[in-house]
Length: 294
Ligand SMILES: CCCCCCC/C=C/C(=O)SCCNC(=O)CCNC(=O)[C@H](O)C(C)(C)COP(=O)(O)OP(=O)(O)OC[C@H]1O[C@@H](n2cnc3c(N)ncnc32)[C@H](O)[C@@H]1OP(=O)(O)O
Ligand SMILES: NC(=O)C1=CN([C@@H]2O[C@H](COP(=O)(O)OP(=O)(O)OC[C@H]3O[C@@H](n4cnc5c(N)ncnc54)[C@H](OP(=O)(O)O)[C@@H]3O)[C@@H](O)[C@H]2O)C=CC1
Image 1 (cartoon, rainbow, N blue to C red):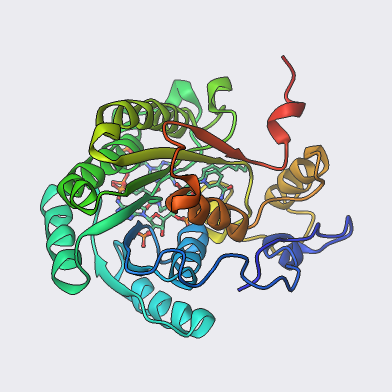
Image 2: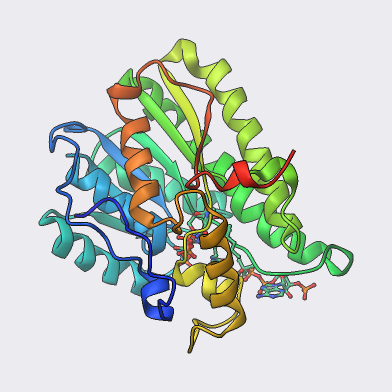
């Protein structure tokens, strides 16, 4: 696996913008860093979740991925094996459904053992002006992002505690305290996840469970293009491509994020290297939040 992306050139076409070229840096963590730990990654079949599943696998964890789609999970199982040479396990699970989540917990326990790492990555998003936001649209996103995060984490509480080194990682968004214009449902859900993380860290620290949030800036995944910006771009002139190009110019490090940038932060925070870090929201955005003004 390669870890650090380089900036797409200013003239990059859409394909390059979607998949920023990665430097050929070897995987920087020890392959035994997370040995004998079991990790669950929701939304682990695509985009950032898939990169997290690969990185945790490469660091030695036994990883179970979930999504609503059995087809996407099968493809992801093959992709993780191709990239890492190691297997992952998968189970379809809608994080909004309590019964699905209970089945997931039982599956993880039976196949791999008690989960020591839970990564809440599953999310939904689509553009909708605040004044047009219907209750159903609001609930569709809150139920996935916030209720799903709560529900999955709570289901694994006993597992996390039993390992003595439980770690919950929930994916937020950078600079969420400024709101998320056009996506107010997702902004509200992600802000609440940061608070939930802090509550868990305080309440569960005495049980040896750490809880942290990772807040990425823009990462041009297929999920963002399809669900937030419309279909993947056919040319660099597309509105979505232009929005991302503008973001890239505003980022102090002058590039968009890659799924691997986020995955590296997840591996670090999941591991004993971060054994005294809990309750934080780690922004992974190339410094973009610094440019947004006071
Ligand atoms: C510009 C760069 C920004 C970078 C920062 C990015 C930060 C965050 C990024 C992400 O989170 S990316 C994740 C993207 N991935 C996904 O969204 C996953 C797949 N998404 C979905 O499946 C849907 O979005 C969904 C909402 C989860 C579908 O769920 P469900 O089947 O329960 O919903 P529906 O019953 O179909 O609809 C409920 C309600 O919501 C309205 N709605 C759903 N999708 C859209 C849409 N694309 N556009 C507008 N409205 C939508 C739908 O109309 C329903 O409301 P009512 O019409 O009944 O009032
Ligand atoms: N890309 C970006 O710029 C940023 C992304 N993020 C966050 O990163 C995370 C990953 O996003 P990204 O990889 O870009 O997008 P993806 O669309 O690829 O990832 C979202 C995943 O969530 C899964 N999912 C959605 N709804 C449910 C559900 N009800 N139950 C179970 N799984 C579900 C989807 O799988 P399926 O449809 O098969 O169920 C999909 O795999 C999200 O939390 C997102 O909010 C944060 C900041 C920026």
